[in-house]
Image (tube, rainbow, N blue to C red):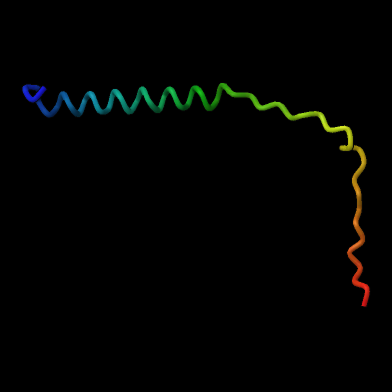
Length: 53
């Protein structure tokens, strides 16, 4: 629509950008990751790092 004034294109760009960023922020902060329960978390294996010279 070439009849639109440039300020209208600028307002549309800012509205689209604000909506896009709001959508991304809401998707990012609404996701709650859950850690898979590991059964070997109580047992920490210690590997000997002694060099056999």
